[in-house]
Image (cartoon, rainbow, N blue to C red; front, side, top):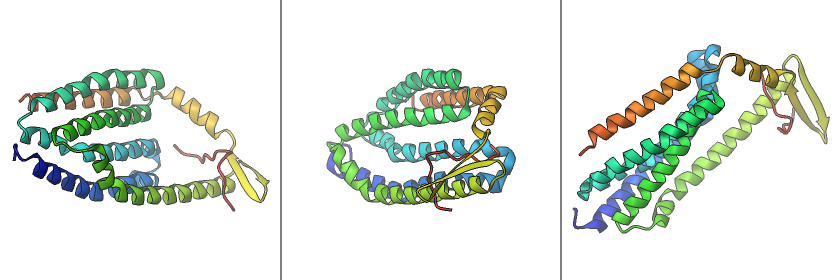
Length: 243
């Protein structure tokens, strides 16, 4: 298998195709239903976890696509590549999470910073795997194009429906401020944005941010050892819906 890179490359592309067919729609679906899912399972007290759930879904999607690259490195007798990539992840992740935590004081910012870092590290992994197997990056794109196109359409439909529902809720909520232009109603909840911003300042999520950062760093260190061988309606004035 180590000598026959063409067979290993075909196997890697096949694995990537089936992983994408399973994980991409699941992750996009989870991101779309994060709001009703959190409300139903955990209640109103956990509304601030909704954007974190969305970020986790995106993170899982990206990570699942490059996960099998580690097996390629081992199959080619190059386990040290796994260790070096984990070191790269650690070097990039620690300052990135620190900056997000200090700059925004929000667990949501930390979660999305994890998505940004895993995107960069995942791209590096796929480039290294492609070179090792004599594959072109365009082959990855052709493999994933159908499922990504279908999932993007699903995401667009879900986001459009969510925006319309949110705008209708804003129009019906007490204290909603609406105006009609060209037959389209534009609404915003008076004081919601200012109140939400004040709440975030009054209750910085420092403990949650620190816990998430430390847990992620400990996970990476463990991998290195292993392979060492809110309530209220918000509706933007730019959002449009027919009510």
